[in-house]
Image (cartoon, rainbow, N blue to C red; front, side, top):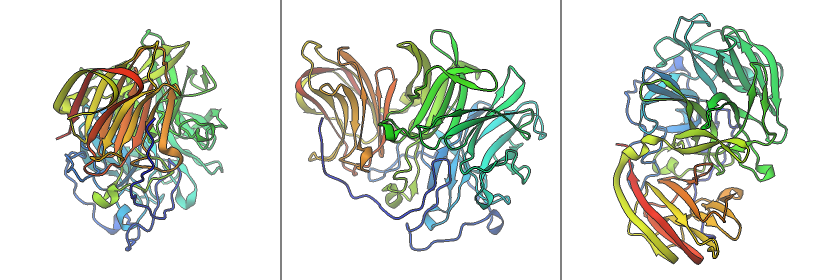
Length: 534
């Protein structure tokens, strides 16, 4: 496949960072390092709602249609909750980031279609109770008022770490999630004496009439039950020694396309030591209210790229607002802890924090096991500002397209003669006017894998190219590619495989080149839709 050794100049500093579920701490970006503020030391600013993804100028790394933080820093997404026709999306936010401060709050954005978001400001202030800043957790709707804050209250279970000891603390909202107040000063799930003890994910167990929690505790997920979100009892665990420190667990039931129902257990994990991703791993299996039994020992992966960490999934709804058991959504942080502060957007746009596109998930049976497939949110194409229908392109060699854009979706079906397949089919995306800088995505037949190679625009070392096997004998491969100002996402086939990557092309790198090496292929129904959220 095309290789390139050119490396752009990146913003590099010395930083101290935590693990994925922890708040980010840093120093050295700017010379003046302010002490972290506490809510009692300054007034809370008024923040009117506004779109978080503004149309970005051509020299900006702020995305045109992906979610991005309005300023400073974001990391972990928190599972969105559906209230009154809109989804409440909380995420970890550090408003002191550029000034050298530390610690994260929970900031809120709302959406109705998973593409256009409205910023609602900070909902849980850091350092506003005795337990420090706020790390990852989850929000649940307490319909029956089991926690004692009234029917319909929103309850957040949040990791905090006073004196460095991680525990789970309760916060509550009675204004439909716009702001939260602290519950007890003590942890509702105290730390039993372990180093890693965080990221609680809670669901209502309808069959047994109680709450169920999965908590990340080093190399295991521990399970707890509660009648009231305050008093928790340990019931079982799910150990995994081979995937590093586990973070951001997930548990849900889903209806497959064949009508059967299955439980899915997910987690942000690190399989890099085995040549596997460091994204969202998951298992299908059986849940009995106490323990989870996986169908297979080895996990599947929701993304095979390098930048889909801390991901969460959440319930889908139909047009009438009713839960759809066959649809789920996912959103992941467009970054990873190997290089969280190397974003040129710090200099050009004064922020560091994007998400990959929200996905629609479906569960289907494939080769005797059930797997999740991903596609970009259905509403995305409603944000098309210009469509280029290029039809069928027969190619041997290379062809530069007349379309130039930094924010678009490209879709087509690649076809080839199985009796005489080519060596390599693909795309040079984010291509510099004179060549050289680009992101390569395609199908490499000699190796039998689909790939994304981002090295010419961002080369963090081992995370330069992702590769996943595909069926070279199939004769065709459907592809969808999302390109934005600082990301490339490659959806392969039915979305069983996705490669998500940060990429940092320069302002004029807006070309698209097709290439077929050592043979011929057809790009059928090649279409490019330029995208922007107004």
